[in-house]
Amino acid sequence: MPRPSKFRKVHHRPEAVYFKPRAIPLTMLDEVILTFDELESLRLADLEGRYQEKAAPSMGVSRQTFGNILKSAHKKVADALVNSKALRIEGGTVKLSVDIKTNKCIRRIK
Image 1 (cartoon, rainbow, N blue to C red):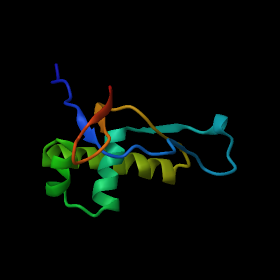
Image 2: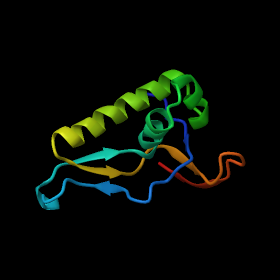
Image 3: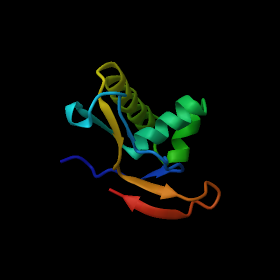
Image 4: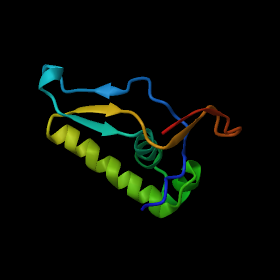
């Protein structure tokens, strides 16, 4: 039996949590679910340009775990873009934070 996942720190909550290809009805689309921690890894690594060694502590995970989360996120986003699927952002074992400095928790999502 695998070990339960630790809560990962997420410092950004997106305003939009659903993306779909234009001009294709929602009923005709398959869906890919991207978790909040996967989105956070994309934000830290790709948007902010941080190296895994610097980004991992921000999420409270090891460098290897961060790399695994990032790899999963890249695969899901590529699948959604290449295969014209809808992308929904939800779930994950995360702790949403208000402020990086104070690390106050809004709520936990599991």
